[in-house]
Length: 209
Image (cartoon, rainbow, N blue to C red; front, side, top):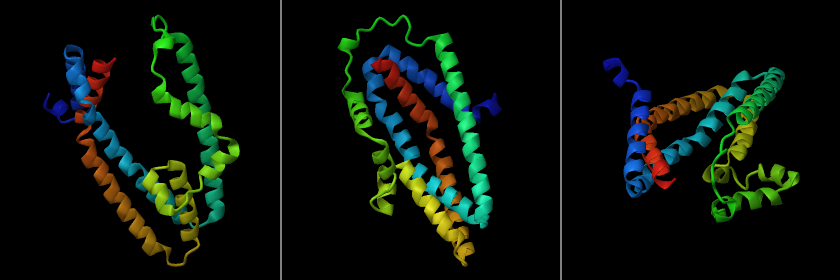
């Protein structure tokens, strides 16, 4: 039991159980606990962009040989396509089998669609050209400030390619690796608050719905 209580997943599962219980018993209290989940998610999202930048840029620059990089990139793309296709097939099979939402007696006319309206409207108006141009950030700092992952990835790839062609890249590479280690230690610190975030998110979900 002592070894179990030292595991993070134990406290996360316990927090989910307690949060769900509170949300069921007192929905108003569960809804009020929403900032706990939002705060944890915000902390995690805060580190995504810099981690992606440092990891991708250091990986590209560390290879040095751009031909080798091209081969690895092609293999990674092929792997991504295969795994994504497999995930889609599994998802379709599970949906057809489980049929989530079946038996829910909800009137679509009474649902509040305002929350999803901004996403559906922007998606409908976005063309392929607009999507590709949107990947290019106005400024390098702007990509990180807005948290646009595709823009950050583009900056990271260009930075990595430029660094690979730089004679003194080892000094910069060492700096990137050091920053990456610090960022992952920050992730470790934030993950200690995962039970608190799971508690707030589950309490809100059960209390709200």
